[in-house]
Amino acid sequence: DGGITQSPKYLFRKEGQNVTLSCEQNLNHDAMYWYRQDPGQGLRLIYYSQIVNDFQKGDIAEGYSVSREKKESFPLTVTSAQKNPTAFYLCASTHGTGELFFGEGSRLTVL
Amino acid sequence: GDSVTQMEGPVTLSEEAFLTINCTYTATGYPSLFWYVQYPGEGLQLLLKATKADDKGSNKGFEATYRKETTSFHLEKGSVQVSDSAVYFCALGLYSSASKIIFGSGTRLSIRP
Image 1 (cartoon, rainbow over the protein chains, first blue to last red):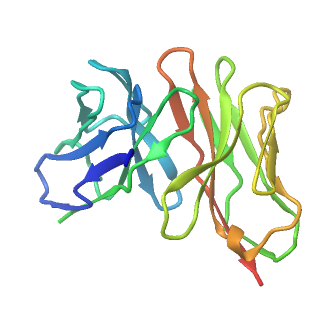
Image 2 (image 1 turned 90 degrees about the vertical axis):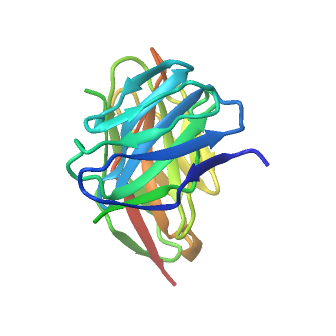
């Protein structure tokens, strides 16, 4: 089945640790995105990538990093520089029309 | 910068009432506009879209018209049902460079039987 797979679904991190969230798609989409969803704040764009080896900062990129070494993969690292990392993270992709296909999300909790 | 502003929720209506959820945007260039919906316990899915001024997107009885003069894309439905209870997100897509897509804060809609 085609789709977007995010892992892990739940993740706990101690303060000061970096963690990496995985996002893989087999839809052959060029563009991929990472969003953060907090209650009452909608989805905020962290990073996005149109093609392999290229990505752009979104509105809240500070404390996050990404890579795009393969078309199907767009991992997000939440670094220790991110001051308030507890949130629900959504990965998405599109074939160019703007219709985003979302993964099921990863919930990160900082202990 | 580019942004999307939605009316704040929650919005509570009785079944068969008329629905409007306001959405306005600020963008450079000519964005595409979208409404996404998140039903309870489910992921986000596209509800409708419009790619140029005066286009009307429609789906499942919902409609929205791309108004360039007022930079708006308000969502409407003539008669809501309990099954329409969900969170609705307005979004815009900018394709001038690298396909940036940004969302509004979402509006929670609850429909009373």
